[in-house]
Length: 267
Image 1 (cartoon, rainbow, N blue to C red):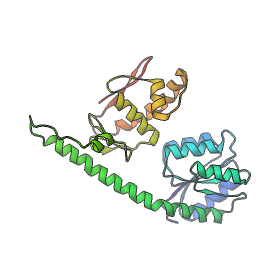
Image 2 (cartoon, helix red, strand yellow):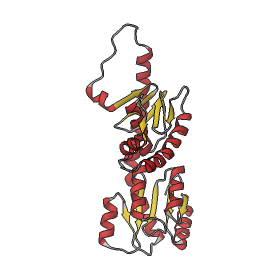
Image 3 (tube, rainbow, N blue to C red):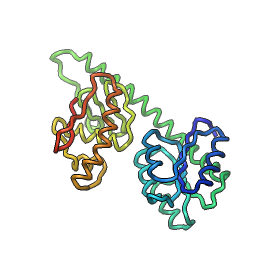
Image 4 (spheres, helix red, strand yellow):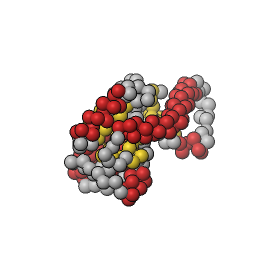
């Protein structure tokens, strides 16, 4: 197993966590572990992982709900499920929700390694495709910048084909590719999760109007919640999105808070 791979182990059984962690670390992997969903979410906010080993019986959450969160936030993270009780229905549901494997307990570390290597091998073509997409995206944004700076005053603008118009969103220095789900500001790629990419798309779509809290959560996450819940949920994602935009080359867009209403993007 290549030493560059990273693993997240989420299980309430301390002996299981420790044995899997030691086995994986001996193989040169980077391992983080959590005893509950809250700690797992904190670790996932800090970085993505190549593979997660997820117990379904957690003290503060249903493991299936955490599986759905991981699949939404990091679609390329492979997930192996450790069910509390081995049933066919649980296995089918876990695979349907995006898990790549299912381990009956007691989990054997060697079996975990075997399934992990299979899952990571399946990821290689997707990783290569993602790397190509990033390279193509970088060249495309550079070309757009060159075309814009080289335009002759008074000359008619190039008309984009309908497919390209539908795929790309432009707002000042922001370029969003809705197909590859990549975002750049001043030709520098932003490191965004899928959810925060959706938040940025929603803000761009409504420029220059302020987006109400409930509208923002509904369009970005598909959740229909109360005003108070929407304010709380959107606050966290906007906070992280602002921090990400601050890392972009200046001048970068800013997200303004419109008190009592929501948020507005100024690009």
